[in-house]
Length: 523
Image (cartoon, rainbow, N blue to C red; front, top):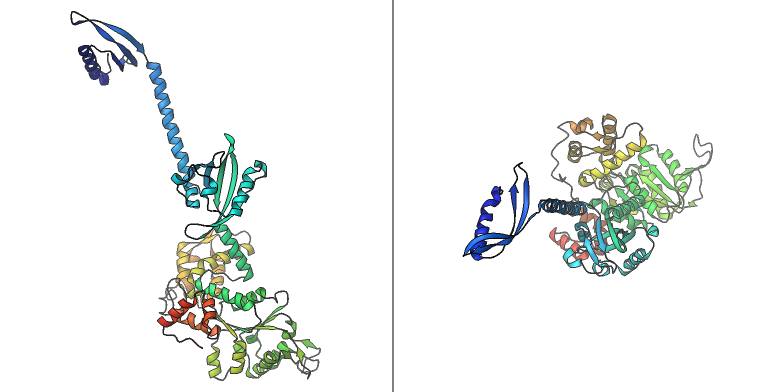
């Protein structure tokens, strides 16, 4: 029996062929008595006698096996097409770019990632030489050509640095392999390593600035100021709240200067309340200079000779000691207690305070001439709440320190809830308080991730998670613009060109911002 789906059209085609006296040629299905389906191919024509069909002459061929083979081939073709689509999808999802070139170096394939890395459309790049398409410098192209010509066993990744269409700096590493089907054809594997090179640069900067961490605008200004003052021997006053990293900045200045091979001596001026003891510590004493002076003693200024001395909390120095310190800064010589002959010294002086020394001068607690002497250059450190975007970086750094110091406990990260609390807290103790909070949380943490309940109580109590004051931004943003501009002008002694350089902006931009805020630059 004819297959139900074929019966109608086969009869219609047969009748049309008889009426027209033409040959019929078609394929159709027949259902056998056992229920199986078979394919047949008919080709022939009806023979007429007295204008009536007399017989049919032709060939009927059983094509069932052929049809099965065609069906299998069609299925395999569909599978191949699907595999091809799946492979393209996988290639396009890979972070590395893949490209193929023929024996003439012309592109025959570019994955979507490769197109994105090179900023090239596949339709325009195919059939063109890679040298013509890739936006690389000539020396990088030469290096890549040498790698293509070399033996496969001797090849290594080629680092390529170039600017993309948006003028952004980008680093690629390209690996070249032979096409296994034809060694003259090559496969390029492109790896975007821009983040790696940026990290290397940040690590280099971090090493240069010791343990200073931060990528915010206020910290970039601090980094620039450190670089600027490291080139000279001027006295620097570092101002900032407790815990903002004043000593780290001082050490970074020393490490970046030409005195880096000499001593760095830090003095906590607030730790010695006895005037004589402070003078002795700073300038030294001769045996018998006072009760208990049983031997000659070298002072910290002499110990720092050739290097740098850091006077922390200089605002707490008593007035009579300030007089001696002023003489040292003016004459660059010290006189030990009990001696009359001065000793020449070569010392870079860095000072720091958490006080407003202008107010201390007004209260007669600090000598104005000493203030002018130590504040040749002024670096104002931002509070942590003024650079909240650095909190995740700092938290990760402190977690890494905790992992290095502890065994048997490995805390890898901070949960979203814990990070939200870290970002919302006002941090009166600044970075030092954040470090203590992370160490506390690591001790309490029971898993691999710090949770909100692991943080110190002051971060959990609602009265500490207060609405930020009006003068503190609730989200990461640079410090008050007026304050930044005035600080830069003061550090530059009114020189607007220098101030613009410190701020990292053009002179025209500085003028415009000064005008918008009605600030009259210091001449």
